[in-house]
Length: 121
Image (cartoon, rainbow, N blue to C red; front, side):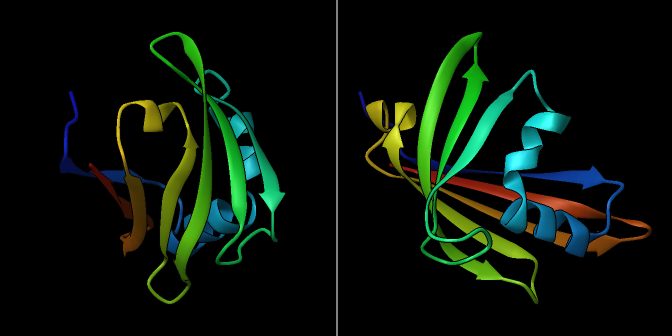
């Protein structure tokens, strides 16, 4: 059975929007230092950190099981603090034909709100 849809959520964080965006585009491989129970690793497969077209391998945990995802950075907008990733290989594609993630950070007070959008077919 195949599902399609779109899920969106907002998460308030204490970091400035620009800093969050820079971290996610330039240093996502450090995410496992912050969330080691969920993110096990992130390796650059092709291209350069922070560049459109770069390919990154993610190793993560879901429901207690190790999972993998290879993603392509499809779009990076430094002015809007926005990133679009498309899953091109991995466990998610066993369930979906297409899986896209858009992350946008917007300043709010001393921190920011991160808007996550997951689109899948």
